[in-house]
Amino acid sequence: MALVESLGLTPLRGDLERIETALAASVQANDRFLGDVASHLLSAGGKRIRPVLTLCAAYAIHGADDPVHSDAVTGASSVELVHLGSLYHDDVIDEAETRRGVPSVNARWSNIVAILAGDYLLAQASSLAASLGADVAALLAATIGELCRGQVLELQHLFDADRSEEAYLSAIEGKTASLMATACRVGGMVSAVADPTLDALTQFGHHLGMCFQIVDDVLDITGTEAELGKPAGNDVHEGVYTLPVIYALGSSNELRDLLGRKLDWPDVEHARALVHTPATVDASLAVARTHATKATEALTGAEGLDPFVCDRLAGLVEGLVTRSS
Image (cartoon, rainbow, N blue to C red; front, side, top):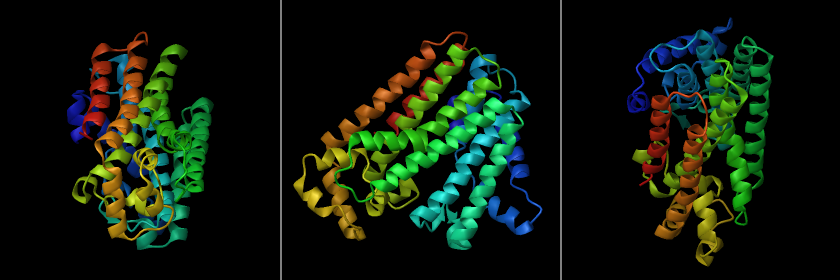
């Protein structure tokens, strides 16, 4: 609940509890086995960043004195179900053994079970979105397409030492920023806000997502396994060359000679050491800060939003950048 506490919005904790109840109901199935598998990661917890964004978008429109309308809870739940479904699929792609401190679905059961359960979660998300109207359903469908586009683009560049910054940014726009943008937009859509303000909330979510992913990728280079909750350097190990690696490759022939293939863990540590330089980290975080600034500016330029909620969201963005320091 650290995220809830940091935002300091009175109704947020209670509204998140409403979302947890809605999520638990959504993952149930007539087939007990499917229900158990679909609820596996849900019961393991998570930060719930995306539903928080949906709630905060609604607070920004109506103020943070009272709980949100039930439509905002439904919209936030649909967004989180898309995220959960994508995690099931990601773990199959990555051959992950754990997720959120518990065995991944593919490790505990099988890849086929994980894929089908992920599909089930996406279907449940679509059902919730459809209950809010055709516009929300269409937005969610388009977002799922963007998640796929971003992930496919990333897969095309596995172990590619020539991966460009442009290709990297396009991939994270799809696989991360699109869903955070949608989370904010849904909060605005169910609150019947005017189009310019709706677009501003969407831009906030987009730039927040870009900042979030870049900082996460920096931490994979600079952090420890205890801090990350997963092996440090996992991106390098899996052949996903992120922004700090791309920048480091521009000035290190030693790193270029090392990459381009699957590395054992001692070589991963050596690669991390080559990437982990002040110049590389600072250059990567400068891009994250640019998106952080754009996120805050999107809210500042919007009309009719609650100043206190906008200030809390600006603090959230700043917190994302400073967690890498």
